[in-house]
Image 1 (tube, rainbow, N blue to C red):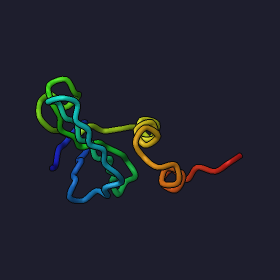
Image 2: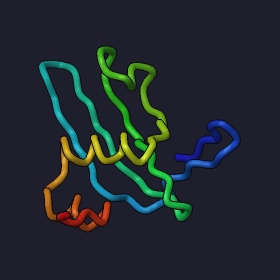
Image 3: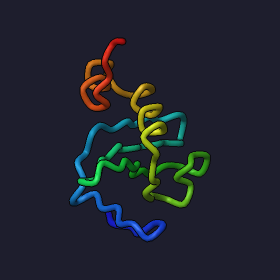
Image 4: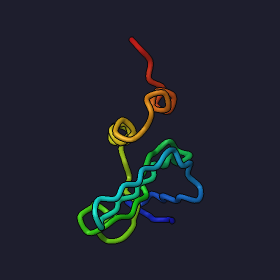
Length: 90
């Protein structure tokens, strides 16, 4: 999937898939995939039911580094987050 948002190209074919999450609640579903572009920018590709942010079917949603970290903290393993975001103990 490729989309231009704010004059920037977001393309799942050229970005790196970091992780994904899928859930189903009743008849609703939500699937999200976290990607990182070669430029280091993050985005979500997702699809879902009417009560999700993907209610229009599927799409791409750019993320700031902080929002990507929030998503990762919700759905990813701690060791993977530490490596991806280069988190160190201070």
